[in-house]
Image (tube, rainbow, N blue to C red; front, side):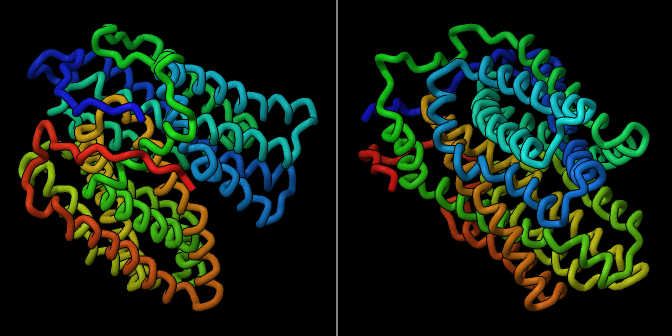
Length: 440
């Protein structure tokens, strides 16, 4: 097995002490990904509407769209990590943006020509999801090349703020566009965002001495062994292993809760549709605020301590969601959702920054792929669990199970080596090298 050198501090294209606002490369990435996260939120509304209104799909057929979109994380994440190592990451990201742009653009074209069908829609969603997995692996490994290590939390916080803003505005934009121009034409907004992302990525310039060169053919280890190296690194590293378990358990129960949230508010709380939309929009504000102040919060609390504090502290507010009542009591659900959004952005910012700090450059892609494979792979099963338990036990008992499960995920990081640290050491000590086991 090829041995990885311990991670060494790398200088980014930003000069020491330079603000991220003056870092041209980061600002290009930030603007491009701000648009790139808004487009799929528009499509999340437009595609189900298109299936329902134009193709007259049933409930299960619409739910299948979401399942097909998440399935590539379970199937393709590990291979994506190796592919991102073998080829230039920026070119991979640009190619993924262009391919997704063409795929989404083909949907309204197929609709105008009378060739649109549900199988075609599933194909577009599935292939786009596969490209998104590859893009995400390369994208998360690219950031440490654009900013200094000390700026990772601030940079990830700003990127997380973009995601929260997209969650806040995207569904509303998608609904308005679908109402004005039709669900099919609303997808052109997603096409434009992918185009903008591709343009900004093409403008990023990183000196060859800073950019990680793709692995040459003569240096490549066998594909299966290369996937095993990323898995072995996570298994050996006590903190990374705990972070993965924490993220996966949290994602499972968050998706279980999300699968019944709208039904609970409509049937149990008798909330009008507009109020339900307002609750979700206000919930995203928590993530927007913590993303904006992630750097300051982590500096005050500690870059290592914030990982477990961000999971533990908001937990009691989650219990307001099953305690919500009709009328003004709906606000309790919104408060709980705001706490969950704040937790998600702050924890993800700190945890991803930690991972980017401790991973050797040659393993970044494959470790990111392992995280996507496990923590995103549980999402479809969490959604299925929530729906099945909600049907069998009722919506409110299911909410109690979900909020308890979400908060219990914090135990993986509370009882970890992070609890004895205030800040992440730089450079982090690496676990002793061990042979990579074969993936079963």
